[in-house]
Amino acid sequence: MRVFVTMPAVVALATAASATPATDHTARTALAIAERSIGFRSVAGPGDQTPALAAYLRSTLIEGGFDPADIAITPVDDTAFLIARWRGSDPRAKPLVISGHMDVVEAKAADWTRDPFTALVENGYLYGRGATDMKLDAAIAIATLIDLKRQGYKPQRDIVLAFSGDEETTMKTSAIIAERFKHAELVLNIDGGGGRLGEDGRAQFFTWQGAEKTYADFALTVTDPGGHSSAPRPVNAINRLSSALVRIGAYRFPPQTSELTRAYFRSAAKFKTGPVAAAMARFAENPQDAAAIETLAADPATVGQIGTTCVATTVSGGHALNALPQRATANINCRIFPGVAPAAVMATLQRVAADPGIAWKDVTEGSVANDASPMRANFVAAVTRAMGKAYPGVPVFPAMSAGASDSMWFRYHKVPSYGASPVFIKESDEFSHGLNERTPVASIAPAIVYYRSLFTDLSK
Image (tube, rainbow, N blue to C red):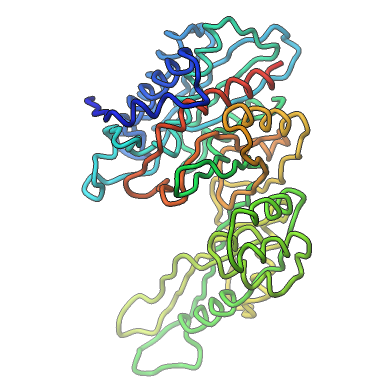
């Protein structure tokens, strides 16, 4: 593919954190891998090019010094996953897993300003589907590992690069990988966490992800004999379902905190302004503070951090314009606080709906309940040290994700997994899953400095 690079973008690769020709060379390698990777339309469905992307990444690793016998691509349905192993000196040591995914969310070229599957570097940004989620991160990790190999680094424990092929959809390959490495020492999920830039482009803070909420879908169904619309009856399937949905919509689950979320609120409050900042600080100390809860619940950026949330996402009913409905259905999507069982949440919703005639069913696919990872001292120390080398003085603290990632499957097997991406972006540049996805190329060189430190620290 042809890539246009503007002069500011080239200059941006050389940052204060890079400081060495080796880092600058590795940054250019990472950018080239990312550009090529974006060109693969690794989207679920007909023509999925995830297996082809896996083959390209395998060839890149081999060219970088990995043993071909230690890199496997495993087909699963229309996709595939990639496992690359860098063998350590101690075969008894549990492996360090670097987790990510190769697939991306669908992107329609007609809707984008630029072709989503043709990488473009312009005015300091890498554009294309996967620029943020997460082909650039994968490229930086690969380039860093190749660089470490060429420098002669010898890990004590195996370093395993594990890239799934359907994280954005069914997570079937994610589950297979986690099952295979359920004995791992810990997992660095480079699809989570990350740094925040201010609108002035300066690094503000970095968060590592130590927990994520459990995804769940519950189907509600009301059935009725129906009849002619000219003879309405007191009971109507659509009306009954609607009334239940209104009650559910008005319900708020009790607020919850954990050691991790309290640490997040205390630290993140310093980078907010106005009522939200004050509410975050107060909630961290008193999760029963009613005024703080009201403020945080009204803010889309914080409502998912204070407890379980459930919302109606689909609804359908009736079979003819001139007939009473025989069936009405709806889906309730929940993001459940770590440690809470989905069955308990469904039981609460049934109570709130207050209609025993509604049939309930857990229809969740590709998700399992999981607890938070421990705030493990060696990981926290390693990630703080790595960030200090890449962005000296930038605050580092934990966070919980309201979404789902491959970490879910590792945590299900009780393997500590941490979102640890070092890429920094502005809040206004967050276009993951959206139009015109982009990430500043200036993030690449510091990310390499960070990965070098983190990978070597945790593989000893």
